[in-house]
Image (tube, rainbow, N blue to C red):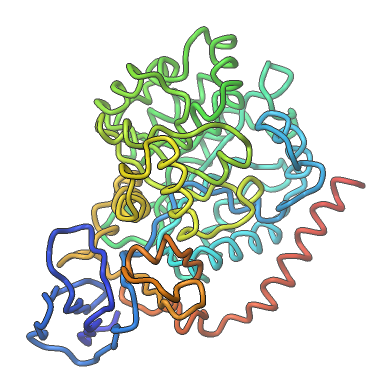
Length: 453
């Protein structure tokens, strides 16, 4: 931890998610923001100065839903041009061949890609545990520590296979005893609920069409016992809604309530197909929603009713979703996509660039249950993303903050996590990115070859 006071001085523009005038910048020490400065102000004390006069400064972006392993199956020919259920049925047999080194490379690459886009905290939903590879989350913890980004790693699960009316093949499902024992182990080993923590664990049965009611109920009980969060896919497609009604005799929100998940410990991926009364119930309960615009467009799933959910009381964040349904892990681009997709639903005058940035920072922090990140204010963690506007795409722009999204920023110049620079001049110091890409592509090729063998 650096006990020297660093002044991020006089940014070109700054978005804090507060009403403070911070045009003079921020002072950071020991991984936290210790002072904010209005235009023209100087710090009471500083040891080092970073000239931010050419940078747009925002809170570190927060990704609330991903599947890191899916970076290995981007643009896979067999899965192109399909909707969710047939897309999953095509990919399940491929993903079943996942091996520890493949997941390590996939996690490192996904986190690196996110970090370079300005992301400082990332949640992953890993639900794939082949019988030969039960310790997937341990592999992810190691990879996250290597990259140096904050993570919420969710212990996903699939327990409802095709033989019992579910969607996934039997050889990728686990028993309730296996799932709950490993969940308890991971919470005990890795979950850090303290302020500024780098690793948190959540419990994440995959979806209504891949887990039993029993595993949902058991997960809710374990989450309450250990004060960890709950995560699942819900209301992503009309096919899922029909599955719930046929399998359980309930719509998705009724199903959620029936398994004791309708509370503020829960956040849901997608949340598209809710009716007005369901939105009100979710809001009253404080259930968080992760909006995944690119994935929803790629799979033609629909549009999340973000503003209605927020108005009802649900925190809303942004997620890139899996890199087999988004095909990239770039969170600043995802914020832009969210802005445009929500404008399509609510009108161009009702969704602003500040809304999208808030969803990707403060909103996402609330979705993950974190009060220490997502905002630039005294006492918050020093997680920052700094962007320059020196590419051709920005030439002629007048409002620097609006230009960040409207002109399509895609790569941060500097990124700080817990007061430490993780990206400098658009690169991660010490990382051989060509070697990372080569190792990752080798793993991707090997996984695809296994499926064809």
